[in-house]
Image 1 (cartoon, rainbow, N blue to C red):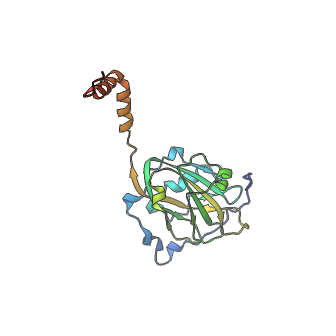
Image 2 (image 1 turned 90 degrees about the vertical axis):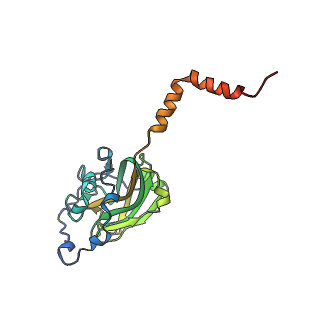
Image 3 (image 1 turned 135 degrees about the horizontal axis):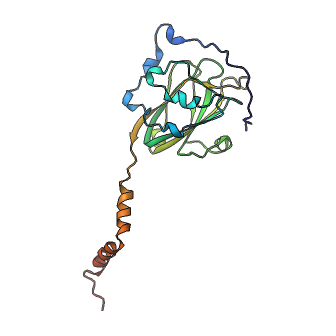
Length: 223
């Protein structure tokens, strides 16, 4: 269990290679159909990142569009140690297909991502204790990664908790860095119709009882 106390280690001087400036842009190989990116379906007002060095930086990397995926800044950096916990709420129900992210070739690249579906109450202790919905192994690369999830486990997703548990430094680098995060899938607005129907029925108990009484009484003479 990591203690998330606050300290700065001055790791801001990293100068990452910009691979996209040289030759082939490998990230284009995983370009998703834009209508499957769940960018507009994220509830940014309720998005929370724990152990982020700069406030709102977790939100900022999710707000990048696909066209901005190679931009290094803004960047999410962890604060007290290498762990990051993000709560990503959606504005409706999502069938998640994959998680897309960009990190780097440095030791600060996150290695293990534990994903929890519809658990908006997790803190670091709970994330370490509870069994995740799925564990994803990330690559140490500056290219955009698309990691598929087991779709059957994410068919009714309204909230994702992402626990970046460690990075590639093997304990030597206590800052993790992520520059882009997105989600691919299909979005369904929550259907409020059954709620209003139930409300209507409950609002007219006399009618409801009359219908039940008629059905109960027809064809059954009680002697």
